[in-house]
Every structure is written in C-alpha cells, then in structure tokens.
Length: 115
Length: 118
Image (cartoon, rainbow over all chains, first blue to last red; front, side):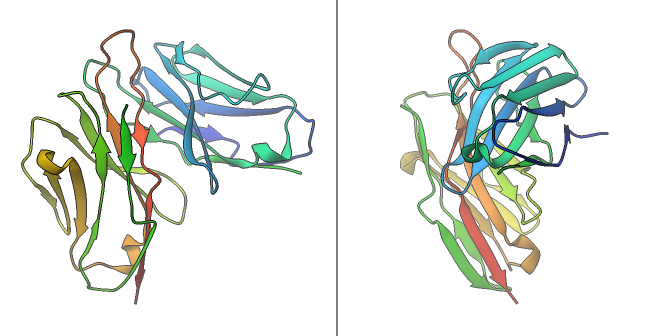
C-alpha cells in the first residue's frame, strides 16, 4: 500500500516567493496533519483536517501560511511570501479518525530552504 | 494541561548495550493514549507503538519493549542489545479522545537522540 506522499521532497526558493507543498494521504484515512520540524522548535503541529474540514489551525504561524484540503486525497500548504525563517522540514501525516486517536502515518517530508 | 517530557536529550551507547528512553507525561484525563515514534537519519517518522491508559501490560516486540506505569506517569522504551541501525531520534507522544468537537492533537515530547556506536 502506498504511504503518505509528499511533493516536492526538496524546495529551494528565494525570500518573497510563493511556496506550495503538496500531500496525498493514505487512502481511507480521514484525518490529515501538517507539521513543521526545526532544530530550534522541534516538531510543531501547524494545522489538521478531519473529513477535509480544518479542525485546529492554532499552530499556523501567521497569515502568510494557508492550508487547504479540497478533497479526501489531496492537501496543500502554501507560504506566501516565504521568509528565511520558514526554512524547515514540513511533514504531512494522516490517520483514521474515530473516537480512539489512531496513530498518524507520516510522509517523507519536504525540506524547504528559503534564501 | 497535557505535557510530555523526554528528559534525555541525547544518549550514546556502544552496540549490544541495553538502553532505556524515558517518557513522562501529564494529563488529568483518565482515558488517554501514548505513542512512540522513531525518526532515523533518513528523516521519516515511523510509528512504533500505541498504548491506551487502561492497558498497563508491558509490550515486547523483538528487541523493543515498553514499560507503562500509571503510578509514575511514565511510558519508557527499552532497546535490548542495541544495534547501529537503532540510531535515531525517538519521540513520545500523548493524545486524549475529544470531549467536544473533534480535536485529536498529539502532544509531542522533544525527542531523545540515540547514537549506537559500533
């Protein structure tokens, strides 16, 4: 079975440019999570969706960040305009939603470098 | 408030040694779930185990074992006869079922970096 798919795997961009990260969750999973990982701040939850609806976006750093999930098989995280401090590894994860919190399965991550 | 503490930032052992990674959690909920994840140098996060608060039996999977003790709010992870391939960052996480809405965040520890040297 295919795991969580993220693209691109690496992204290098200049400050001020728009960046779009993409995620395809595991088929049948209805919860999707976007995380950011840096050495300084560790693993941070940015936003998560349940049944394509954003449930908690309290971790989104600021208005420059936005996330969408137009359908059950696709989500995007957009940064506009990007800044050097956005450099990090961005992970997407998915899980089955239910009364029990099921384990999250992570994609390989997108390493973003903003120069 | 919910919190996960992994007090050991870095651990270095020699191959074949046993090593225990500590995880202490805080929650006022009586129903909760605990998780361990592994992040090898390649970067992906790999799920290892989920344990609910009503199941205090220790879990063993090959060289891996987990010791869940509610009395001390700990969910420690032991690797027996460590190998170089065990070198990774290990994360402990906590989740409580939603009471309202549908919020099911994982509360993550900061991770323990384990280096197993040949």
